[in-house]
Image 1: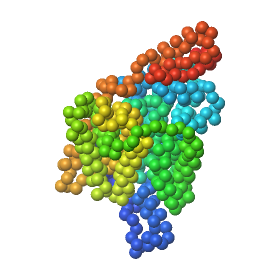
Image 2: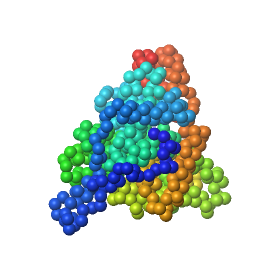
Image 3: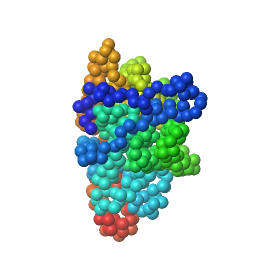
Image 4: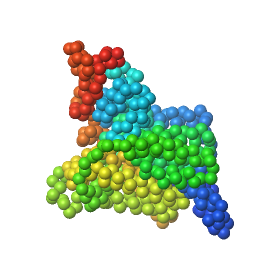
Length: 489
């Protein structure tokens, strides 16, 4: 999953047919009659949900390749400078809500217990596994579990994208983005609380995936059920699930049915939620500028470098503070637009849907949670609640990849090659810049989980029955009983 090796030479495979029957243009009215029979369903099957044409290879080389990619992805997330601190520290909701719930509440009821108004099935299941370990290993267990889920999403994307992106190189770049893009390796790195930003991207591809085997179809359905019961952003995919239900074959509708079941489970706590969040009046111009900074600019450069592009004394640059974000948005839209103009129908749908989801996901988050710290003219802009960038950046990257992957016409071949190299270089620079950064919550600091456990054990020795184990940040704690601490120690 090396993004740097292939990004500059991305192109469509010429050895295999680029537009098989599944990727063709809509049937002509003279041949099928658009309003007669199942012509519109066939168009959906051919252009929105193109089928993976070849069955999955199960030879030893392929299995080892998947295993190696999985292990490399997990290892990368754990050994980068930001990731190493998560092996020794427990973060916020991961401790108090998920580990605390798994340690003190009954399984399986706790798995479907809402928090903040919605379900978190994957984080709660992961916490259930982590608490089976000795208590001193919980921090590492949570970090590894989060990295494993994210690596699994990357492999799902690689496999599920075969219908729209037959080229393995293209799919490797897309899967690598799930692991390497700096937008995912800041606030959202290696913690259970932010897994839902990644799984919604996996759910998008699981809905588009039409595999050739029943077991893969079942895998898609399970992935969708887990994703939608983890992320309330699944509601953005309702139109895609509805379109999937219209496919002619009954088997192709199963993943959409699983999506509907998961959505129904998620809607129940959402409708019954009494959680209210105060927000300030939404500033449209600031919101647009913030969205441009948090998605196109962060996708290209990463959140830390984006924050450093803006000086603290912004009043001196009040007329021009948004230009880096606007420039990044123009470049991203121009690249994506090239794919929309000249791509196949399936590629056009993929690019359009990805752009819409990028805009809808960042727009919904900014509008529902608007406050002054989200403004683009704040110091260290985009670092505050940086998690909002994760899913939108992955969707936008997909649209940009479609544009970069378009086989160039002779008159623009050299231009597109230069653009590919430039985009790869900027993203790689953002990755290396993030490794060196200490801004915000990239690297967890303060007492480690083991040190906080030592303090808790001393408190238990004084005769206390219950203790509060400190985590990061310092305002969060995990409530446990001393009896449980002794049992798990």
